[in-house]
Amino acid sequence: MDDNEFLRQLNDFLDPPADTNPDMEGVQIEWLRNDPRFGSLHIFLEHGISEAEVEQVLLEVPPHVEARRHPSHPGRTLFWGATRSDKSIIVVCED
Image 1 (cartoon, rainbow, N blue to C red):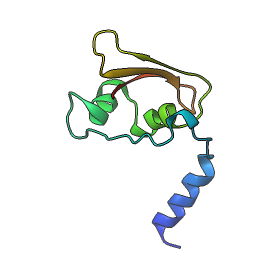
Image 2: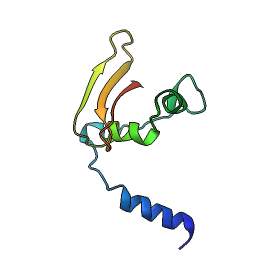
Image 3: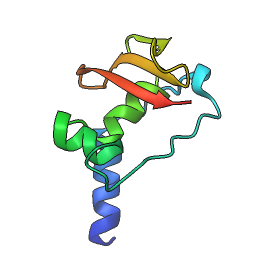
């Protein structure tokens, strides 16, 4: 077993699987990376939130998630939810 395999197995052990959110079946996240104004780099630099945490809120069955249309931008949806570590976040998605 090499180091990468060991780390993968360790992560699988420490990070228990979660049920997938049936309402999000077929949804695919297209991350915008490497731009500090938008996307994953922005949320990490400005808010300390990882891509994995966003995916937990959107794709897994967390304790509570609420989705609403953005009032000023009809092509965006706002999701209020919690990560596995119970961090409450708001995710803004382009539809």
